Length: 415
Figure (tube, rainbow, N blue to C red):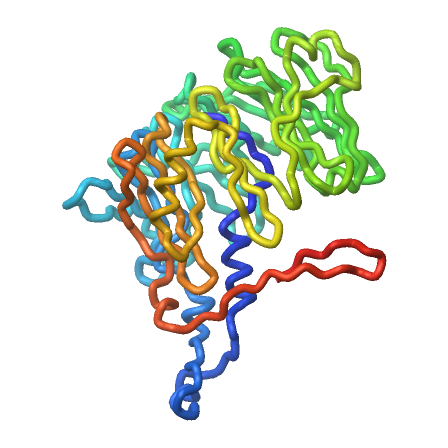
């Protein structure tokens, strides 16, 4: 289930903006008792900066259960829970000294994949957890090696493409690893400083894009179409364009379109796509089709079609965030979902394999975020968590969006 990794206006940003907007005056709880009558009570430090009651929630591909992080004996650990009424959460990890990291599902929901490092050394180990038996197995070397996930696909649910720097600490070679057996085979050996992306196309893992950072900070991209063995120059971006998010991302499931983000004029990004048929014959200046041009802010993909990988909902963020519906079949769904939040905004975190069940976050500048399950068939929602309900006991300031102008006329969206 490949999803395009366009820059996203994430909930982390929203939470950060909420924290920034809070009337934070930190002191000891005892001092709160001395406040003059009628003054807004201070928010204890542990409420603002302590562990959330729940975080890192992810919906399983069958839409029947979730995995999440919640403290156990004061330390964040992984839990799983069936969404059907009557089931209690199951503890999957039992770490006592360091918090567990969030987990993602394998595309068939058979396993959970999480990671750890050794006390902050950033050498990451990938771990496979069976949510039924709670068995945990290290998939990658335990010391001195940084591992990362580079790709998965619903056609090969027992495989992951991972990067390992065990051969040379400077480069990550790409391997295909079998989740059942742990065996891996080499897909790409990195010897030249290029970063290579892969897609599952035509029944095999294909190397499709090759990126190299230039001395001036810009990026150049080479393209290798499915079935071809040679790379050809494709796109070049300056440092400023690269920093603004300009990049190609990947093919859809049928390899009909190559999607990407361009921010090369006017400071406004646009979502574009190149027809693979045209890429066969064009040179470096390949024509593209405009999918959406941002009107004022950054762009990200909120939801993609699990069957085609085509973007369905975009999120454009400026002074506030707004949703851009690319797939018009979702108009009724979003209209119904808008009735749920009342004074909150909503964000679709992930969905099941058929995209009929959505995991949704409701967030606000004056309330703690909530997690809901949205059933598209019945057009109804079920609240499952509040992230930090203790925060709702306090009065929070609303976030104010303002537009400033620099002396040179540059527009500065501010909060």
